Amino acid sequence: MGSRGGRRMKMRKSMVFSGLALVLMLFILTGCIPGDGSYDFDKPAGFLSGVWHGWIAPLSLIMGIFSETVRVYEVFNTGWWYDFGFYIAVISGFGGLSLSRKKKKDK
Image 1 (cartoon, rainbow, N blue to C red):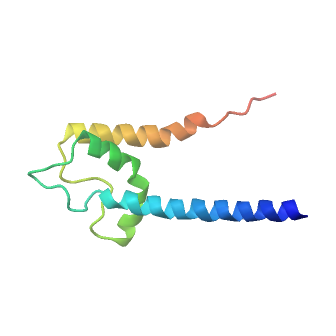
Image 2 (tube, rainbow, N blue to C red):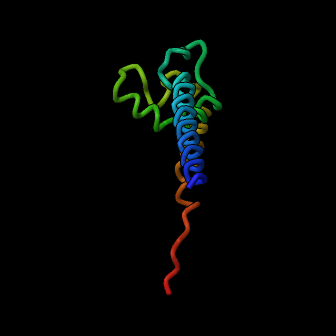
Image 3 (tube, helix red, strand yellow):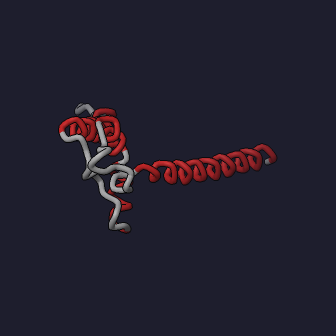
């Protein structure tokens, strides 16, 4: 019975650590969301910003519901290169999920 209690305690510590790590990661990710005012006409968002904004698009969408300043897409961007980076990130991040699923074989 002693080993079960130890396992439960380790499991709880692991879950608490994972939860805190997730919350910390969410705070870090929200530091550079589209529409936060870090880009303007003189300094537009480029390709790498497009990739980053594509990866965090779901968080930006959720935060945009509660804040008028947060957008999914950065308005001040370099044009085609930003669009390309955004598109590549969205497709690789969300399209990759369907590629990793195993398909059931019919018998």
